[in-house]
Length: 268
Image (cartoon, rainbow, N blue to C red; front, side, top):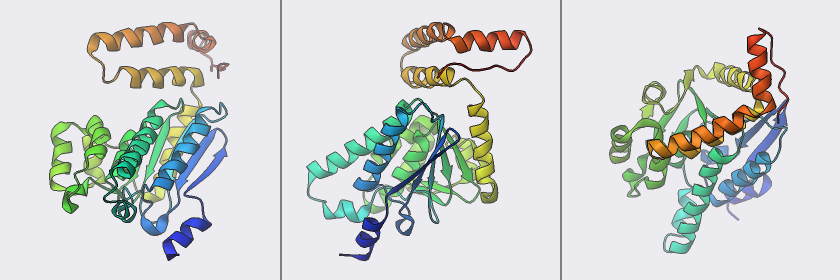
């Protein structure tokens, strides 16, 4: 058995901890820059499925061990199945399902990005609700450099940064730095790596102070309407707003605002 296979057998691909309403999922293949292998994708999917049904979890942080966030798919694994289209299709279908699940779970997902986030790793950042990056992080869709166009990563990235910027990354394969990723809209904040956890903690504390029911309704509504035509988008959003207004938390929040007091959220 190869040394990397032995290491993989000894440790889980995704480490999960839950504390004070926050679930932290940590990609744990640091010696390979946390590639999205079949097992890694399955591990993330399993954790997300469990979290989606856990009302005690209010926020999810997606982090990674080692020197970088995620280097994309496992090229060694893909090369070993190079002539098996069924296997390749299954890999990408599984990855796409996992990426979509990030938007479908009711909890906000925050990416903690350090080092490299390339190809499907860049896609992973793009599919999280919020992304906080270290100022030394870099982002790329470099598949064209090795003859494999980053078609699936483009799906998420282009929904963050716009068509021409995405095509620049796709056609050149060149990396962008954290400051550029911020200006293009791929990440929300860029901070020194020493402040990465503090900035993520700031976001989690704000989210934890808000109504969980309102956030659940709001996230579902956002992703349901974002790619719809204008009229259909407003139909969806109007229905959600009407349902939201019937919640206990809406009544409590409005009363608290009018009475100039802190809200006491009741909804789950």
